[in-house]
Image (cartoon, rainbow, N blue to C red; front, top):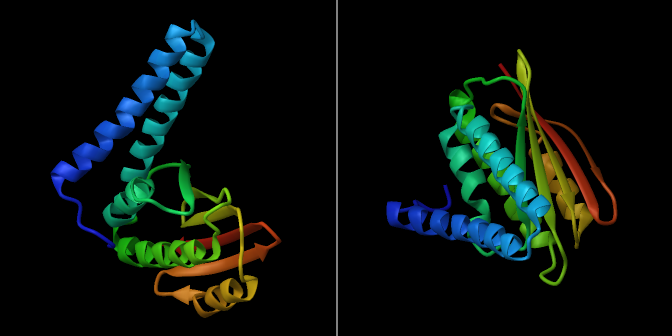
Length: 179
């Protein structure tokens, strides 16, 4: 893990996030934009459902890393979704966290500060495996460095690289963990 969060830090960041959401609702209510208020509330509900699904995977380090990633100043914004039923990823937690955090650290070196850089991670649970699909949109300074890193990390303990595709401002990576 990059950082051990103290309880007071977690509460401060969480409070900040919730205040932002409440201010969005309050501002739209003041403008009598009820439809937008309902959209914001639906987005909050969806986000909380995804947090629940993520924590129910029992990969504590991975969930903490994903849920707190955007709390630091980063060049890449991160979002995630969990599809499928619950499973126990606790035996793979350290490997999954290490691979994912190293990959995002690499991508941070490829992103430019003036651009919009976004990574979406879809976690799909199947009966005998879990697939993680990383979908990046933003600047890529050196495609060869990314290809080299991915090839050198094709099999890292429980995590196996299935495929990747790199274009000018887009990158997709598919990894899996077989049970």
